[in-house]
Length: 94
Image (tube, rainbow, N blue to C red; front, side):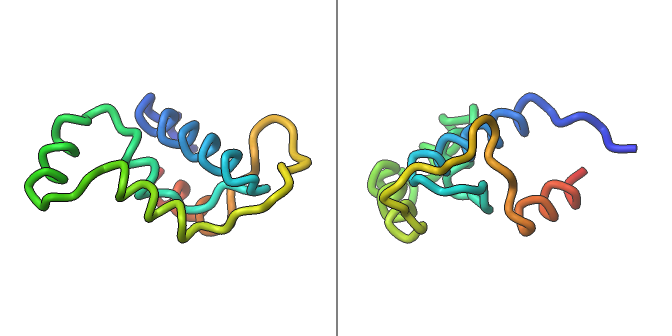
């Protein structure tokens, strides 16, 4: 029996959904770097980026530039499906 996802996990999955849709993808893949970008503990994240002299918007743009992008929006309505790799990661975490 699986435990329900925490609010933080739900927020990360929602952020991943939004990122996938913004790239016109038809599935949600592993988006740990982008989900990390949206996490609530921004002060810790920002302190770490400052420590290494990394601009968060530049980092996000560089990550997005490596992800696949489609010119056409997906035909999927509602929640996008998870890629097999993303589903395995969630199942392993649970």
